[in-house]
Image (cartoon, rainbow, N blue to C red; front, top):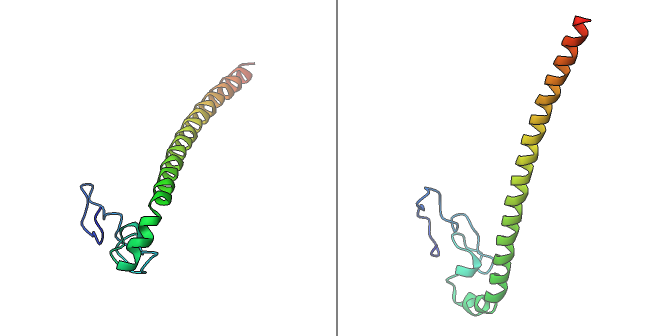
Length: 100
């Protein structure tokens, strides 16, 4: 979103710049990549490639995290199913012992 953007997005949450502190000028409301100050323009243009690389790395890490979270959810569901089956088997065994 645009620098100094405090508008709400379509989802109703504040845009990403809200609450961010610029590491170049120290002001709040924008990230260093969007810094409007004169001294940051030359510095940020030299860091654009590094920023793009880091952004891509963050996207990859988020995708990995999402996959890991999905796997954890799958394993938890499988564990719950196994626990139910175990309780059923134990209940049947207990019924059989009571009949003897």
